[in-house]
Amino acid sequence: MIETGRLILREYTLDDFDSLYEIMSDPETMQHYPAPFDKDRTMKWITWNLDNYEKYGFGLWAVTLKDTGEFIGDCGITLQDIDGEMLPEIGYHINKKHWRKGYAKEAARACRDWVFENTEYNTIYSYMKYTNIGSYSTAVSNGMKKVKEYPDPKNTISYVYAITREEWESLV
Ligand SMILES: CC(C)(COP(=O)(O)OP(=O)(O)OC[C@H]1O[C@@H](n2cnc3c(N)ncnc32)[C@H](O)[C@@H]1OP(=O)(O)O)[C@@H](O)C(=O)NCCC(=O)NCCS
Image 1 (cartoon, rainbow, N blue to C red):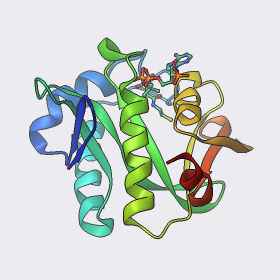
Image 2: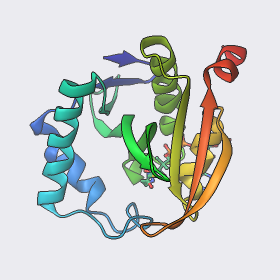
Image 3: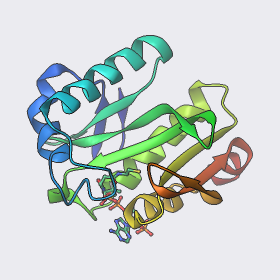
Image 4: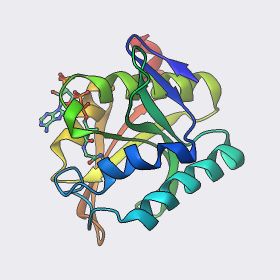
């Protein structure tokens, strides 16, 4: 469990399905993905993360509001194929009711700190479709810099952002 000023990040449970489906089935939220998720894909998202916790000790965590317990999205670390290399990546999805309140930034910073404090990784990444301004703006507000862009059949072009342990140490 990770606690920030306004948020608690905790492991997913199957009970999060309905709240997650509201986010992942929404066309506006999923505009930078090939398609919104159906119920099956949403359930697989949760079980993929339950597997990740077992295998790696991390995954995408449920982001909840500390005051009310409301599930507002997810944020965390997964291993992603970024231009042919499996790299640790910070990802985030926030319910659009709660966009632009600084929640993704708050959660992503906590995940970034968690990685450098609890793993041996020396660089942490975020990558996204080149059109995903919200995603790369969140990466920048997480102290990351753009390190690469590459042609990606899934995203047309993917942008890669990163922060090194050394850069992180100079921030905190
Ligand atoms: C990307 C996403 C998680 C951002 O969530 P959020 O809680 O609204 O983001 P925050 O309020 O914490 O904003 C973080 C920074 O990004 C900026 N930002 C967020 N959305 C933005 C947008 N649509 N356009 C421009 N800037 C944006 C904010 O101004 C803030 O910058 P600052 O620190 O300089 O003030 C949210 O838009 C989302 O869920 N998108 C759909 C899912 C998705 O595409 N996830 C990423 C997959 S790669």
